[in-house]
Length: 351
Image 1 (tube, one colour):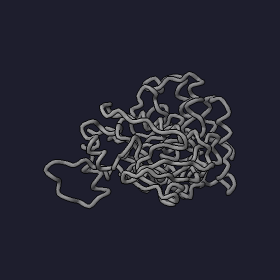
Image 2 (cartoon, rainbow, N blue to C red):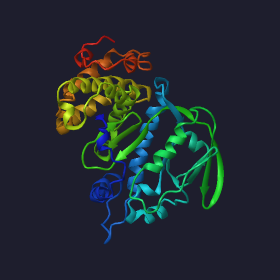
Image 3 (cartoon, rainbow, N blue to C red):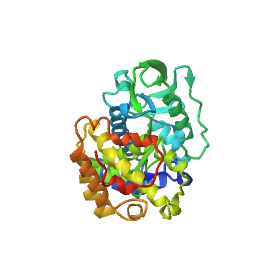
Image 4 (cartoon, one colour):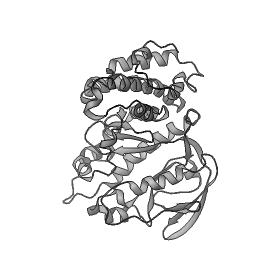
């Protein structure tokens, strides 16, 4: 659970990793079956993981919109583009997902505005309002540049005004009018990797697929924590302090600044979970299981307090949180203040 080091952001789908892990991931999501002579791309496994992440993110982002001073229209759409997929399997992906244009609908969240407007999985999204999405480069290496552009065009629209979506289904162009709900401005993305990765950059919330496969019942916990980083503008506030990322993040004054942001995000995450209808005690259950088993590398680094310290502050936050404080927690005010590095004060703060 950390802020993204801008020098290490990788947007491409890691197909080599997906093929390496597919047997393990499939075992947790699909019935066991003999391996075919030639492994087919696990597109439905990818869709299932992406959709689970999107569903949790949508639930958190819409339930906590009142806490976010940066909002977007919540549609309940999970989008993807052909150029997210490696060139050697791109044509197969285009056929599988019925791409008929630059942006596809990978999934639609149940009971969302998009679902109410009859947007369906594997529709193609041609544009929004007067804007039409640009075609992607079929020869480009895998990346999410065009997806980010399309997402930003949607994010820029009013968070609660009607939106006209231009879709293509079975070769026929159609128009859908969607009434969104306000949502916190954040993209939610699964990183297919063997490590436990959770990070945020002010707009993106990214966690690795292992959280969803190994800890499915508690996956909302790291997602809420990373969303809290974005809501509290931690990336901007750290950059204002001139912090160093990577190996240098655990040296000198960087330590206390990063620890402050981690604890602030832990505290706010309890309210985010509660507002979204989750039992906030799942945060304690997650850390009690995850901490002893995986509290190495990042989680033992000097930039992060121990998992026991974090569990303790979250337990106290739950105990002292009144019914109104869950909706408007005091820690929200921190986003308007410079980071001072006094992380230990958070351990004894009054609620």
